[in-house]
Image 1 (cartoon, rainbow, N blue to C red):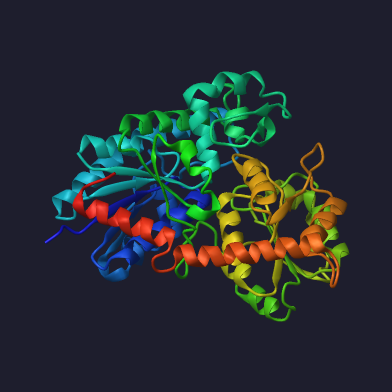
Image 2 (tube, rainbow, N blue to C red; image 1 turned 90 degrees about the vertical axis):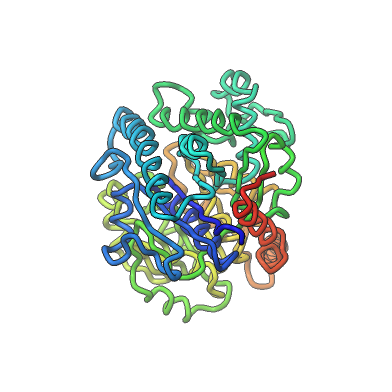
Length: 472
C-alpha cells in the first residue's frame, strides 16, 4: 500500500502570504482522501487567526493540523518600526524559524505522521535546507506571476549589474531572456530600491537572494508550484526553464477563511444585492498597502462624482490616513459604503460588481480574473507594478491609473480610469472589449480548475509524486 502523502505547508505571517498558503493546504486535501496536511505559521499570527479550540486541529477528520512554529518573538513583527527593526525581525525569523520547523518535522515523524514534502512560500529559503537535512523533498510555492519569477531569476543569474546601473532611470528598457522588453520602473521594487543596503526593505532583498541560492542547490529537482493557471502565462513558462515550474492556480478559497483581519458583518453583501448587475465599483488596496496621506480626500469624492455605487475598504490600521482624512471617512456616502474589511472573493463573485480598483497584489489580481471583473490598477510596491502592466498590456482586463508625486490617486484620474473599463450604457467599445476579455479569462479559469483541466492535472500529479517520493 502506498504511503499517505503528508505536506507541511509553511508561510510568512502576512495576510497576502497566509491566504494562498492556507488555500493550497485545503486544495491538497481535496486531491486525494488520504492526504495529510500540517499548516504552520509563526506563533503570534497563529494565535491571532485560530482560537484555542482549533489549536492543533483544523478539521477535515484530522487530516489538517494547525501547528505554529517560533520566529523567536512573542508578538511577531510590529509594523511602524525602522529598517533596523525589520532587519532584526528577519534575522530572528530565519534563525528561530529554521530551528523550530526542524523540531516540528522531527516531532511529526516521532508520532507516526512523517512529512513527505515541505511546501514553503517566498520568504522562507531555509525551509528547503530543513527538508534536505532530513531527506524530505521540498517545493517553493511562488505566489506571484511567472513573469516576476523570471525577472528575479535573471536578476540573480547575470543581470544584476545592468539593472543596478539603470535603477534610477525608470524608463530604461531592459531585455531579459524569455520576456518582452520591460522598463526598469515596472520591475519589482525589492530589486530596484531594496538592493541598496540603506533601504528599509534591504533584508527582504537579501532573503530573495537567499531563496534563489536555495533553489539553485536543488537543481535538477528544484520544484516551484506557482499560483497561476498555465494558459495565462504559457509563453513565459520557458523563461524559468532551470526549475520545474508547476502552475496549479488560481488557488481560490473553498469555504470560509481564517484571516489576520476580521471582516465587517455581511451587510455589505445585502447592500450589493440591491444594486444592478455590473454597476458597483469595488475598491480595496490589500492587507499591507498604506494609503498616502490625503488619499481619501480624493478617493471618496472621486467615487461619489462618478455617479456609480461603490464599496470601499479602508483598513483601521491605516492610522495616518484615518487621522488626516477623518472628515472624508465620516462624511455621508450617498452612493457608496465604506467597510474595514470584507470577504473579497464573495464580493468579486457578486454580479453587481463591475470594476475592481486594486493595488494589484497578486491574490487580488488572480481573484479578479477568476471572477471576470475588470480592474483599475493602482500599484504601490513589490511586484505590483509588473502585475498592473500584465493586467493592462498582456491580458487586456484593465487599465493602470497614474498617481501624483505624493503617491495620491487623484479624483479625476480615478473617474477617468473607471470609465475606461466600465464605460457608459450603449457607449465605450474599449470598455466592452475589456469586459468580454475578462469574461473569457473567467471561463478559462473554470476549465483549468475543472476535472482534467491544466491546474487540476498538475496539482494531482504533484500529490502523487509526494506519495511515491519521486519528483521530475
